[in-house]
Length: 179
Image (tube, rainbow, N blue to C red; front, side, top):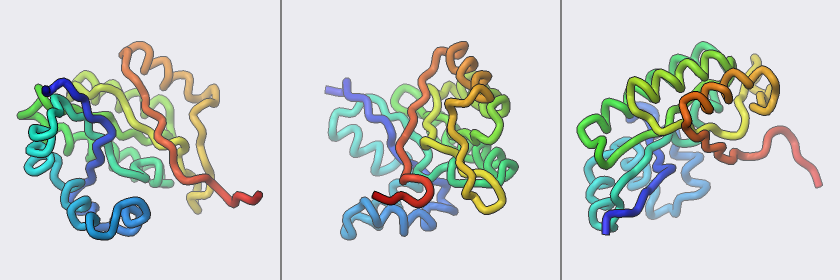
């Protein structure tokens, strides 16, 4: 049976994947960590073979945590989002019958995020976006942008227009939490 759909399959640019090791070690068993790092660098190969052997008919890739939401600098975040979106689109282009992606977006500017989402959906055939639940911003990265403010209406309107979902992925709690 190849009717299963696998989504939230993580990827990272190969040049940055090793920097994810420390965070991945929080939730990946130590004996599986090297394999995980290898897998997020290579969305095809063994990962496609595993999908075949386990009856997975379609996989949707998304950028691993903290993703673009971990980049406080707006310009860097926007550039990196475009880079990773183009990279995964190129990686999966020959397997579109089996592989898709969610766009990675900088949420510093709602209009720019809407434009990048539209580009990814129309140009690359992406299925929507995956966002971590707040965007780091500010000079120290300690400003948190939440997407339920009126400034984000233009972004949500674009999602409705494109008729695509946005997966709000939980991130670690922001700021200092006490009981």
